[in-house]
Image (cartoon, rainbow, N blue to C red):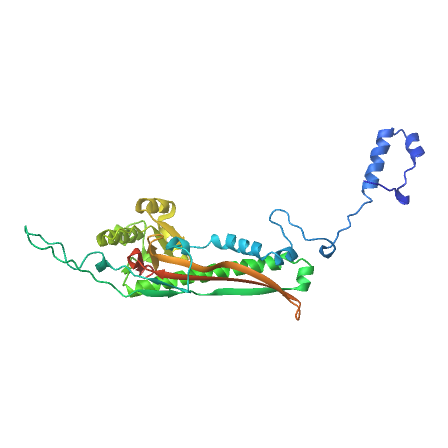
Length: 335
């Protein structure tokens, strides 16, 4: 680095030597004074090119990389996405719809049972019933936001990041809400509801402690019992509940909550999309299907009339429940 002595900092070398200082002290003294005379000259963003360092990016670069924006949205949404745990992914969609059959309990067996056959007699004709198929259609969801040219030029990355996160959160909320809506419709149509205990009134200790039949653990065991009695081969393993119910559950069991989950074979997902006072229990990946006609995609463009940069994301999924006995709703958890 080139250094220049300023006039007011020019040292008097003869006076320094006469005072008893050696050459090394003089160099150190001059060095400190010289360094103190330099100040950085910052270069604003419009004078430099967009840069990327690790996960750091500029607004201008992001506006020109819609594929990168999509990847960022996917990374953000994956953290709070539960629809893929409930529904299995069975590929794409052709023609904007899927025709499917709903499995019912009375369709597991033939309508005419096996019969004992005497020697030389004709075998009985076994008959069965078939239901009319159902149709699930593609739904298109999306949204957009804009950045002004001034915000881009000033590299206001905080505004852009906030809008990306809001867009990601909105996508998660919408897809999760649609998943719950489809589950609730199947629950109502197939009477898949059982009444549980009131978790808000459980007393854990003392002379008035609630007996075991009033604790949430009984509800967990009850759902497993229903699955076993129906003999359909489903294994319930995921409770989807409102934060209110999780709060009550965690308050009751404390450090022993993991013991409850381990002993009953369940996992928990907490979301505001589930109605307070209820919970939805599923056999993961067996309830139905979630197909995608168009995966999450992002496009961007510049609107010259208003000098705004637009970022737009959309997705075209569909959901359907073809195995309604793989889901159960528990009600009455808050009285």
